[in-house]
Structures are given as structure tokens and as C-alpha cells.
Length: 187
Image (cartoon, rainbow, N blue to C red; front, side, top):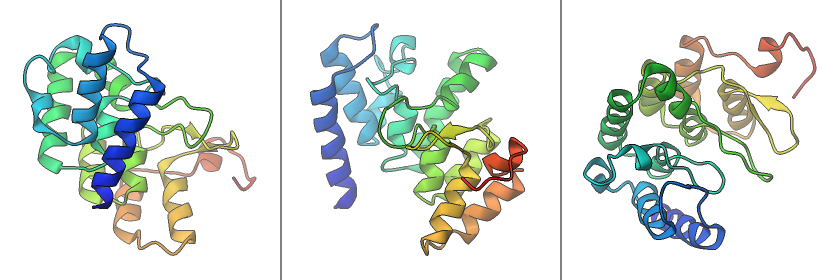
């Protein structure tokens, strides 16, 4: 029920905000991103497997991979990541799976951080295995730097049961942003 609400809300936001994807027409972009936000397996078939779709981003620079993490389906995300990996050079692929949202409100997070925030350990572990950077720094609303371990610490501080996801992040070498930057200030 809640996931359906999030999908509906996201679809409404797409309509209101439009799409920043120059290579797709607005109706095509809207249809594609709605499928992504709904975790619809149609994204794995033509025409959605074309480069224009795989590189597409919303007005806030969200990729389909970002949107797939709203209502994550392990098999679908695995197949989509494999499609990305086979469609691009290694650098282009890594840029996509580590791409950050660019917005003036909220966290400017990448797909791994969305999975960490949603407390999805198996998918997070898979995305890390596939090249997602566990120490990729992104910005909080206040402009300060954070990593996925900072998100885990935030969730833990708010009473969330994040033991499994914390283990995934730490086993992958995750550090908080202030450690990476050599900064002793609290975030």
C-alpha cells in the first residue's frame, strides 16, 4: 500500500516537474520513469533497452536505477544492472550506478544510498559487488558531506534496526565522510 502511494506520488511529481532528458520526448520519458518507479519488468524489453533510455535522467537527474530502489525487486534490479553493464564502457557504467540526484531539497543521493536508506542489505551488497562506491560522498540538505555509512549512523541514531546493513557497508570498507576527509567535526 505504502509502495503504491510512493509510486503514485512519484508519477505525479514527474508530471509536474517534467523531464530533463533531452534524448527522449516528454511522453516517452514519463512512460519510462513511471515503469521504473513501479519496478515494472517492461524496462528490460525494447524500446526501453536502448541507450537513450538507459542514459535518461529526470529533472532532478534521477536514473531508472534510482527509481527502481523505491519498490526494490532483487531480480529486476539485478537484470537491469547487468543490462547497464553490458551496454556501456566500464567508466560510463560506473558513472551511471554512482550518479547522484541534483536537487535543492533533500539528499543528493546515488542509487546505493537509496537502498541503504531503505534498509535493503542484500540489494546493497549486490550493488557494491557490481561496482557501486560505498564511500561515494554526496550532500545533505544543509550542504554537508555524507556517505552511506553516515546514513546508517543516522538511521541507527533514530532507532532503526540497521545491524545487517551496517555490516554490509563496513565489510565493504565504508567510512563516514569526516573520516574520508580527515575531518574531526561532527556532520
